[in-house]
Image (cartoon, rainbow, N blue to C red; front, side, top):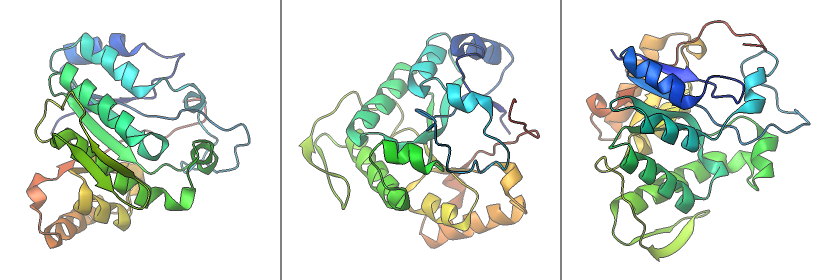
Length: 243
């Protein structure tokens, strides 16, 4: 088992390059950072953590800039998003960011993704909350095409583009692992359909062992090898709004 470290990566916290060097010196496997481009002042959508929204959520740095700084001062530490809110990004631009980070880090990037919970944040990006999962799937499929094909194209309900050429390609073959965040059975089905791993939060799982067994069964039913699915669990202490 490998141990990683999740950072809120807020602008009042430790700098990412400083944290990355300390983690590598202590033989941590990976550094994970989250993403929120902003928090709507209305705060209509309740925080799924069941407490007041923790202060760092208002202060998130950009994950890709931060992870690039972390990669630049380390040699073996894996760098990861936990999670990237894919539906809030243009897929062609995001594919370029992911590929560039994996290229520059010599294949150390892990692409943790999620659908997001903040409806107002998503709407400010021009997206409809109830369509986020289908949009997420199409964008991931489109990005995989960009990463793996010389001339990539995609035709979906929400994502469409004719043949394009985009470099650099990711260092990892065929691309960085795509890890789905979530703790529901639907999350497991998404893992089986278009992801390379699953990354639940332990506190949201009533029976973690049973969910892992179910995940392996669903993956096998999709004709895939369950042993090839990466499992990364977020383990957290009890939080308060100031933590």
